[in-house]
Each structure stands twice: as structure tokens, then as C-alpha cells.
Image (tube, rainbow, N blue to C red; front, side, top):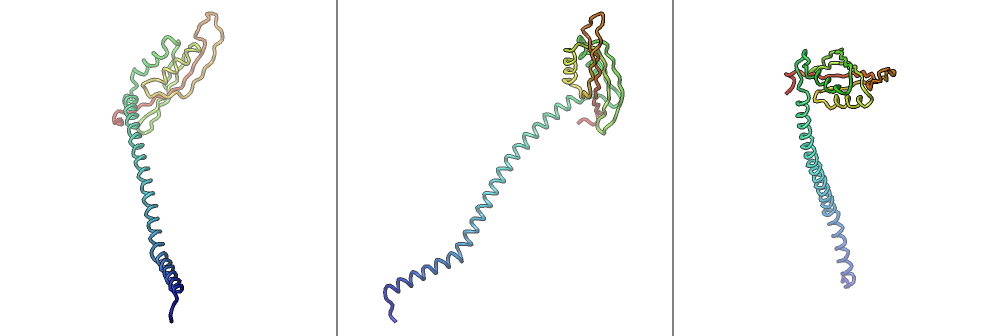
Length: 185
């Protein structure tokens, strides 16, 4: 049987198409899927690496901030031992109120231990002017001592005959944090 040129070309084209289909199904599709999976893995690893480097920088920044805060805490919380309240606290309160108020009364009420530190509850009473309230409380808040202002009650006094500028009765409940020296590192 003799094939015409046209049939030969058709057979060659058919064989080429069959070979291309076989190549695609047997080799190229698996190869393409593997390369796509590898490209996706590379992209994921690159993203993870960038995230890790960013997180590492954030961790370094946080460690620096913790170190700074620890240094500040050590300066701020260096207080005496368990049962001794230094006169520094009393002098500090007197300096906060000096020239701003009169009639300072101080009551040490409660002492509770919480593991590494203790809280001493202090009630502070004094008379002051309206502007003196903010100055005194600001001075207490900005203390180098670890003081928490829990509650402030202000009551305006009745007008006196002497027209005193100290016309507010103030009662403030404060907590002084006391750390034991052996617990501070």
C-alpha cells in the first residue's frame, strides 16, 4: 500500500500530536506541579523569613524597653525592708503639701503582703485651696516612690469668718508599695 504525500503528512502530524499529548501527560504536568509547589514553598519560606526578621527586631526593641523599664523600676522601687517605713516617705508627703495646704493628718491603716512586695494603706487628710488640690496630687503621682492614689474625696468647707484660702477638706487614700531588699535584683 502506497501512501500519498498528504496521508504521510497527516500521519506525521497525528504522531506529533500524540507524542505531545503523551509528553504533556507523562512528564510536563507532573514537572509543572512540582515546580509550582517548589515556587510556593520558596515564597512561603521567604515570607516566613521576613516575618521572623521583623519579629526579631521587635523582640530586640521590646527587650530594650524591658531593660529600660527594669532600670526605672529598680530606681523607683528601692524601698526599705518589710517592717520599716523610712522617714523619706513622710518628708516627701510634707514637701508635697508644704505651701499648698495645712492641717496634714496621716493614718497608716492596713498592711498586706503579696509575695515579693507589700502594700501599706495610708489615709492622708489636709486642707487646701482648689488649685492646691491638683498640685499636691500631681506631686504625689510624680513621686520617685511607688505610690498609688486609690481614692480622693474633696469637700468644700463652709465659709469661715477668717476667709481662709484653704477652703477644701481633702481625704486621699494612698497605697505605698514596699519591696523587700532581698527580692530586688
